[in-house]
Image (cartoon, rainbow, N blue to C red):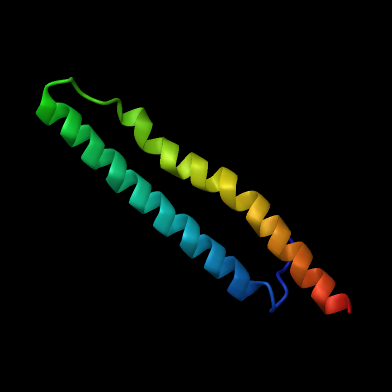
Length: 78
């Protein structure tokens, strides 16, 4: 793997923090939704649904990271 340049590290940390916080928040929300369904007597929720917030977060952060990288690289070249 290629070594990261020093200017990319803070941006990657920020994006990973956003991804992690979003995934945890989504997992907690899915857990609360599962408890609500169980309390209402609608049956259990599949544990596979807890993967959805992480998948959505990952799919949304990839284009954001690419766009941020392009912006930063253009700024460095000017």
